[in-house]
Amino acid sequence: MPFPLLTCRCRQSFRYSLSLIAALCLLGGPLGCQKLLQDEGMLLKGQTTVNLALTVPETPPPASKPLSTVPDTTVRTVVPKPPPPPLNPQLLPQEAPVVQEQALAASASSAELVPLQPRSMVTKADTVLVGRTISEDTVLRGTVLVKGSLVVAPQATLRLEPGTSLRFQRGVGSGQNPRLVVQGRLVCAGTPQRAVVISSVFSEPQVADWGGVLLLSTEKKNSLDYCRIEGAETAIEARYSQFTGRGLEVHRSREGVALYDSMAVLQAAIVSRCDVGLVAFDSELDLREVSLRENRQGAVVTRSSLVAAVSLFRNNSQEGLVVDQSRFKLSGCSAQDNRIGILLKGGDGQLLQCRFTLNRESGLSAVGTRLKIMHAAFQDNLGVGLRLEGARGSVTQSAFSQNKGGNLQNNGLDGFAAVLNWWGESDEARISAGIRDATRALGGGRVSFSPFLTVRPALAP
Image (cartoon, rainbow, N blue to C red; front, side):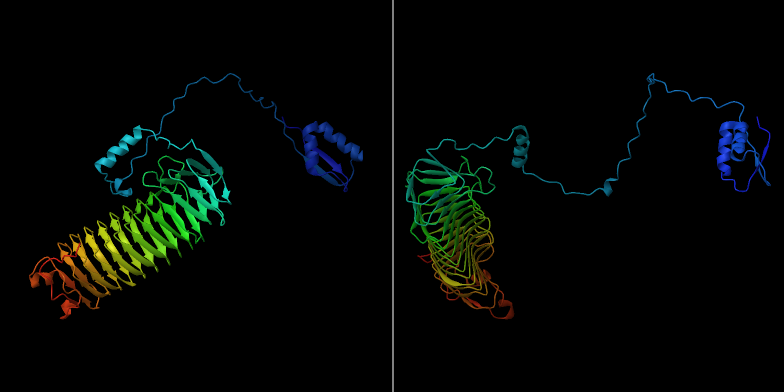
C-alpha cells in the first residue's frame, strides 16, 4: 500500500544525492529516511523542500521453483528430414567411359581378390660390405651383399670372378639408391656359362631398384665381359671414361648405357626393356653385333662418332636409332618393327648393306643429312621405305619393294640421286608412282631414278 507523502526541508549544502536517499528509503522505510535526515542536520531547516513518493507492493513475488532432480524419461520421436531432391544429371560433369581390354579387366578383378605379395630378397651372402671404399686391389667372388654404395678408389682395381653376384641394398636411413662408383678400374671376368650379375637385393629386380655402375674419370681398361646388369636407374654411366663390354646384357633399367665424353666398344651385347637403351653425348661409340630391342628408344647418339656393324634395332616403340649431328658408319645393320627404324638428323655418313622392314612410319628418315646408301633393302614397311627432308646424297644398288606408304618420299627441295636400284618391278610408270617428290607438282622432280635395275641386286640383304 502507498505511504503518505513525506516533506523534508534540507539545507542548501545537502551532500547526498536524491538517488541515494531514494534507495535508502526503499530499504529502510520512512523511519530510516527520517532518521538519516535528522542525523545529518538534526532539525531540518531551510527553504529547500524534497518530495518523495514510494509505493511498496502488499505481497512479495513468489520464490522461484527449484529444478527437478528426477531425470526426464519422456520418449521424444525425432522426425527425419526428407532427403534433398536429386540433382539434374545434366548439371553434373560428364566423363567418357573407360574401356578396358578383356585381359586387363580380368586381371583387375582378380587382383582385388589376391593380396599383394612382398618381393623376395637375397638374404644369404658370402660377403657383406657396408658403405665400403676399396683402396687396394680386391677380388670378390660368390654372393656379395653391399649395403649402401661401393667406391673403388683411383689406385685400386676391383675384379669380379666368374659367377659372382653383386647385390646392392639401400643403406639404413638413406633415401638415395646405392651405386658402384669406379674411379680406378673395374674388371668383370664372366664367362658364357658363368656370367657376373650386378643387381639389387631383390630376386626379381625392377626399374630403378638401385643406382647402377658409374665410371667416373677413369681412362683405365675397364671391361665388363659376360656381365648382366638389371633393375638400375642407369646401368652403366661413363663420364670421361672408357670401357669395353663383350657379352654384356642390360635389362629393366631406366637408361641402359649412358656415355658423356667417353669411349665404349660393345660386342655381342643386348640392351632391352629400358626407357632408352643407349645414349651418347660427345663420345665415341663402336657397336658390333649389338641388339637394342623392346625399349622405348633403342639408341640416341648426339654430337658423337658412331660405328655400328651387324647390329639389330628391333621392336622399339619409338625410334630404333637416332643419330643427331654426328658422323656415322653403319654396315650390315637391321631396323625392324620400330615406329621409325633409323632417324638421321644432320651430320654425315654412310649405310652399307642395311635392312629396313616392318617399320610403322618409315624405315629410314634423313633430315638435313649428307649420306650415301649402298646395297640396302627397304621392304614391307608399313609406312614409307626411305623419307628425305633436306637430305643430300645418293642411294644405289639397293632394293625397294612392298612399302605401303611408298618406296621413297622427298619432302625437301634438294636433289637426290636414286639410280641403279631395283623397285620391285620393271614398269617405269609404276616405279614413278611409288616415288613421292614434293617438287614434282611444280613441273620437275628432284629425285632421279633412271636408269633402274630389272633384277634384285645380289648384295642387297
